[in-house]
View 1: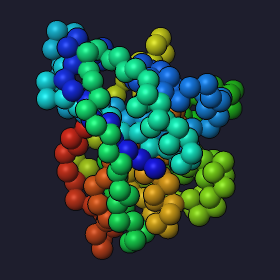
View 2 (view 1 turned 90 degrees about the vertical axis):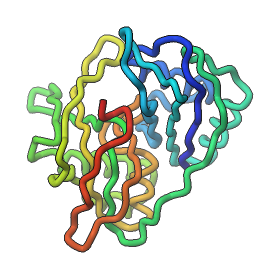
View 3 (view 1 turned 90 degrees about the horizontal axis):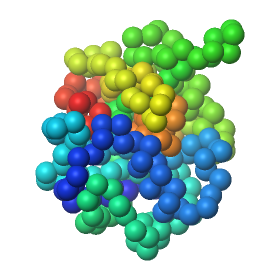
View 4 (view 1 turned 120 degrees about the horizontal axis):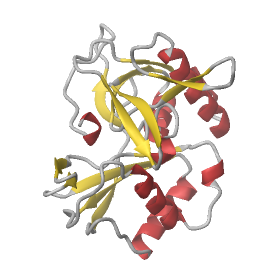
Length: 243
């Protein structure tokens, strides 16, 4: 299940590194839960269309926040929580909540926007972790390794066979340094090309790509199925991840 929370304009400047605060709101709505200690079969997006001014972000026309959750029971619990519990986030109010219908994945080949930067890391021989971006030839292997782990956790064997890579035809790929509390992460802002069954593609769209999707990385937006040549048309991202 995936849905969009529409928010009113903010009355106070939103800090640039706000993702961990949205994560806190998410868990406040859910109530006591064990998701913090589990592999994230859910994804939290970033707020859209913010304008930087005076050391923070402003959403003068309001904004929206996408959340995807694989487990329908947890998704329903979240919706009940957001309807019943308070929401305090820099003067914003919830205007409405709308479910997002899955795109048409029947072709088995799709192109997704990175609605928030995609975080990948490689475990080295000394057990340290190295950030991996769209430039790294190892990125596809790590993307697929990560979704395979989530597929195993969700007991969806068809999703384990997904083939993923960053779109090499995209004109403006970039990396973004994201700080969560006191730790900096280098992540990629670039569309993804994916091949798999319709069920596997919907799973990917819901739970996100890469690591730490539960704290705001790797949320995926919809752009469309791939053409016969295997590459979608390059287009500019409209999400705040491109900022």
